[in-house]
Length: 280
Figure 1 (cartoon, rainbow, N blue to C red):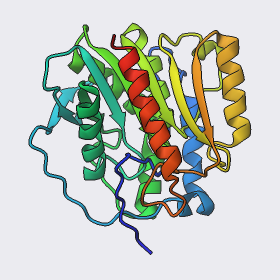
Figure 2 (tube, one colour):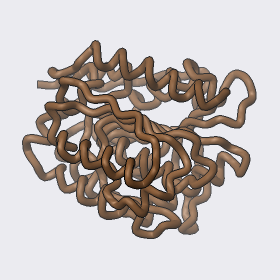
Figure 3 (cartoon, rainbow, N blue to C red):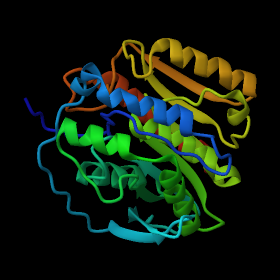
């Protein structure tokens, strides 16, 4: 039965995608591509209620097209801050694609934080509304293309841009990889129940702190994988602000039967604090 995906907190109900990576060639591929295989798991798919139709009208947001590192172009959605600032937030959609729910949440985040926002489109203009189509789209993402899209977004924002990243599930794993790709331009990573990078040598290249939110009742990723991530971040000498809730997958999604309002509100407050502290 379909439920209203009233995402307010941009849940990322979704499954994860495949890969990506950047200058560090295999940086993201193994982690994100392996996670994308969850799309074939009926239990994983069942955790994501199909969204009802929704159209978001924004007075400030606009669709954009920018050049990518592979000689093509990419689609995104941008909202400029009311006051000029070098700070950006790259929002990575969940497995449905860059739909209007994502745009709504992206604009809310931008307003609350006072930053420019670009919602990246790793599906190249494919938006889905069924589990079957979402699974296909997520598994169709390639490391090379996603990397080109992400690099193109950094180039579009400009060399002086200071970039935070955020994503849920599929987007959560890609949020971490986008921060890895950003190098010194990346100033903070936020990931909600996304696939962690497992290679310590890759984590050593991080130039920003990571804020993570995970459910102890989740299996995508499991509590064991999250614990390993914390250990690997420690080995890499990087800061991980880890938050674990007695909640399951997509707990921040209001349309999910297992939506955890208390955990979602706590996480959102921490997101605002994490970003604002690094903008001082």
